Length: 258
Image 1 (cartoon, rainbow, N blue to C red):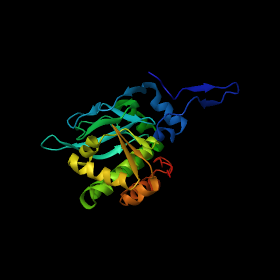
Image 2 (cartoon, rainbow, N blue to C red):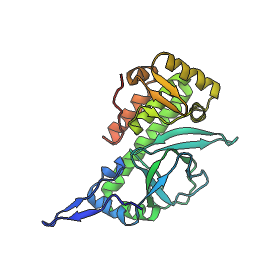
Image 3 (cartoon, rainbow, N blue to C red):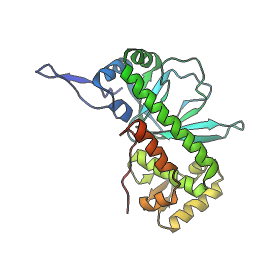
């Protein structure tokens, strides 16, 4: 598999990075920390719908999505209906983020948009964390930002309308993909938000009538990013601010469309 962190020895004896990892969290690390992770790190392709972890699984690896890949973290309820708690793109990682562990993960990790993930074995990551205080600090800040994002999502689900939540979700996905065309069906959006398909159909139709989005088969296209931001709740901005305060430059921001 492709390894994106190889280094080159220049004639002057200065080691430079041949290619930066396609994951922002890894890209923010120093070369010494990347070297600690490199021996067992590998990139693997993933496809939409693929499940990387189930709630009862004990993670054996940490997964770092590369740019264009988005993972959905789902709480699986008693009736086996999954509801999304948050999404993670190239700004972060999931799985065994603090090395080997004995406890089950507790959530389903499913691929929302395919591409690739960088997989780091738990033992390798644990050894790297023991050897590098800066790496421990960076991952600790990221996990704190991620926890804040999850808490914002829980509050959002309890307090805000389906339209505001759907608009926020589209903005979150566009941020991570960097593309106004979102590979998303209305049925999938309904499942992720934990509402009925008929509810999402009405919401998307209302947003489309205002010129904010356009619905196509299996896809929602953001036509007016600024207008969609106005339709969203403040949680989208709060999540950005949370990341910016703890882990600057990790969370991507999509450019506004007309």
